[in-house]
Length: 170
Image 1 (cartoon, rainbow, N blue to C red):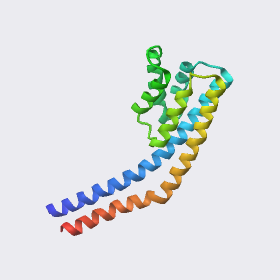
Image 2: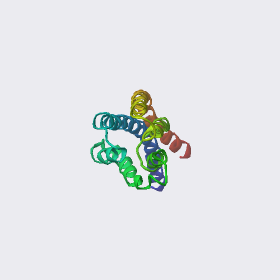
Image 3: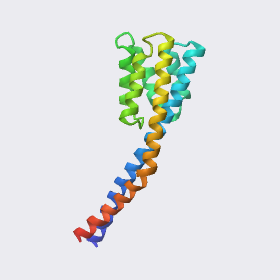
Image 4: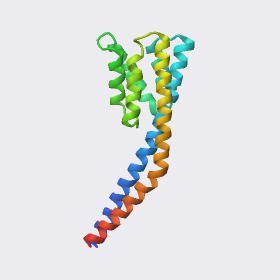
C-alpha cells in the first residue's frame, strides 16, 4: 500500500512539474501581451493628454490589464521617492518586485523603456515605448509558438518521467 502511495505521489509530482513548465510558457505570453497593451495606454496618455508620468501611472494602476496592475501600483507608491531615486530605478525595482509572469527578455525590454521615461523629450519617450511594444509583441508571438510546440511535450515528459521512475523503483 505504501509503495502504491509513493508511486502515485511520484507520478503526481513529476506531472505537476511538467504542467507547471507549460503554464509558465502560457503565462509569459499573456504577460507580454498585457504589458504591450498597458504601454499602448501609456503612450496614448503621454501623446494625447500630455499627462505627467505619476498621473499616467495612477491611471494605469486602475485601468491597465489585470496582470500589470500590481506593477503600476508599486510604481505609483514608489513615485513618492522620485526626488531621492531616479524614475528608471523606481520603474526597474517595481518591475522586479512585482510578479508579472514576464520572462527575462520581456522584463529587460520593459526596463529599457523605463530608462527613457521621464528623462527625455516626449518624442524620445514615445519612441522608446513604441519600440518596447513592438518587441513585446514579437516576444509574445515567440512564446506562443514555443507554448504550442513545447507545452504539451513538457506535460507529457512530466508524466512519463514519473511513470519511468516508478517502474525503476518498483
